[in-house]
Image (cartoon, rainbow, N blue to C red; front, side, top):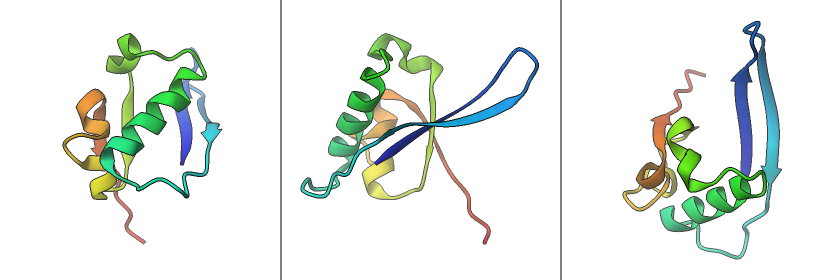
Length: 84
C-alpha cells in the first residue's frame, strides 16, 4: 500500500509526494484492512481522525477500497478514472 499526497501551495504550484509505502502481503486485503493500514500510515505523520474531513481519497473502485466498512467509512472517497 502506498499513500501519496497531492497539494498546492500559496502560489498554486502542484506537488505530489509519496508519504508511505508498506507491503501488506500477509493480510487479507479487505476493505477493513485497507482502512486500518491507511489510517496507520497517516498517523505516522500525525494526521489523526479529527483531520479526516480535510482529506479526499482517490483510489480504484475495488471492493477493498470502496467497501462499506472501508475508506468511505472515514474519508470522502472518489473513484479514479483511467481512460488508457
